[in-house]
Length: 90
Image 1 (cartoon, rainbow, N blue to C red):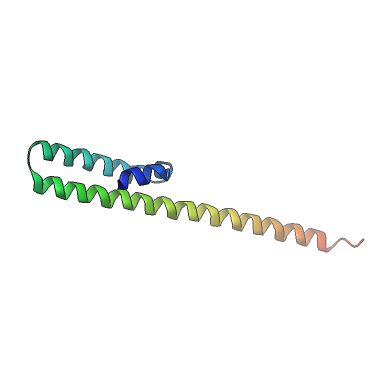
Image 2 (image 1 turned 45 degrees about the vertical axis):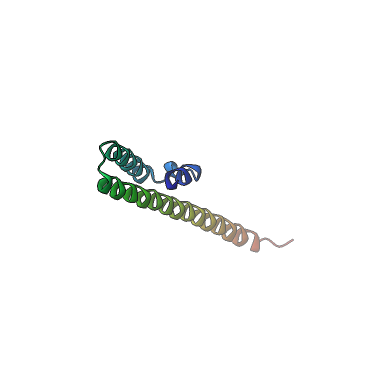
């Protein structure tokens, strides 16, 4: 479920390695279930969930940083435009 949530949030665009690790661990957990190694399966499934949550958090942080940079650029552009226009008298 955590991997599905991360995929729906387009995490792969920003945190692909973490999402890949989550998928790998989930596959390993499934293999452990097939081998009836339930302790390993539980541990790997929990690690997969944590990796997916980490991927989602990193993705959200990266998106927020990009929005912040865009806003700073817009603000700087407005400041330059205001300085340019403040010297012009009608």
